[in-house]
Structures are given as structure tokens and as C-alpha cells.
Image 1 (spheres, rainbow, N blue to C red):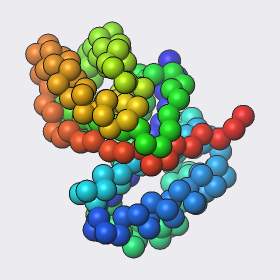
Image 2 (cartoon, rainbow, N blue to C red):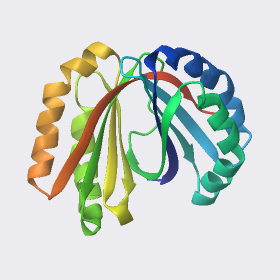
Image 3 (cartoon, one colour):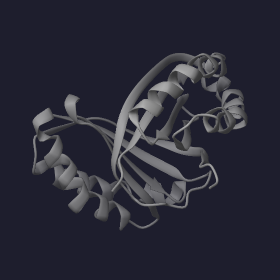
Length: 206
């Protein structure tokens, strides 16, 4: 499975100012990203109640990710400025994922951030590939499951997408059981668990 190189932004601000920034990102992000070599796809998510944006762009190499960040950083901050009180950027590797899922606005994603010893990164990846992802993909309403990894830092971000808010809510118990069983088999710590609405997904044609 090909490794993709991700840049994510986690942005918080006043919920009352969120919609205008989401509209601006929907309008400009595909064109801005698509001008850069190595661009693969983009996802824009939001928590409208608390005032949070999570967005991620996928790149075919570390160099493509880094070079695009240099070109896009200034305009990206300008687009976020009316809303953003905090902006946190991260780089990840997508190492295990549902191939070519069909996604659309209105779907919902649950994200979990996990920490473990860097020496356990390979075991965590193997566990996700062999048990975690197949179990998540089998949940009612599941669309995709992805493991984003920072092996050298002992960090992982697991994302599970569902077709709507109803199936997301219904999956909370079953997914918690999957998570609990996985954590019993290794020394890992869950740092956060969040849910976001998919606002936009973009993949260039061709």
C-alpha cells in the first residue's frame, strides 16, 4: 500500500465566525492545492458547535508536501485569519487506509489521537492493518478507516468515516469496544477523541 504524506491543520476559534471561513476555504483550497506538483487530495472538516476546523492535504512525497507548504502558507493563514484563534500544523504519513472510498459532504468522521513508545509504532501499524481497519470498515455505515502515523514520535491519528451523523452516533459503542480490545494488547494512551462533519472533499481529476 502506497504511503501518502499528509499536512493537517487543527484550527479553533469563535463558532459564530466559522461558516464564512469554511466558505472561503471551499472556494479557494482546490485551486490553490491543485497548482502544486504531487497533490493527491484534500479534506475539510468542522465541528460547528465548538468552533473547530480540521483539514488535511495528501501528497505523494515529503518534498512535495514541504514545497507546497512554503508556497501556500501565507495565503492559508490569510483565509483562516477571520476565524482562527489557534492554528496547529502537523505532518503525518498515511500508512493504512481504505482504498478509494466514495466520500461526500455531510458524512461524519471520528478521530482518535494515540501515543505509544516509538519502538511500538510497527506493532501498532500491524495491529491496525490486521484487525483495526477491517473491524472499522465492517461497522454499519462505515465509509473508510485510515491510520496516520508519526512513527519516530510514537504518535498516531486514526480516522473513521461514516455516511451520516446517525450512523456515526450508532457506531460509538461498537467502535469503543474495538478500541478497548486493541489497547489491551499494547501499551498505548488515547489522548483525544473527536467528531467532525465533512464539509468538502477534493481530488483532482486524472
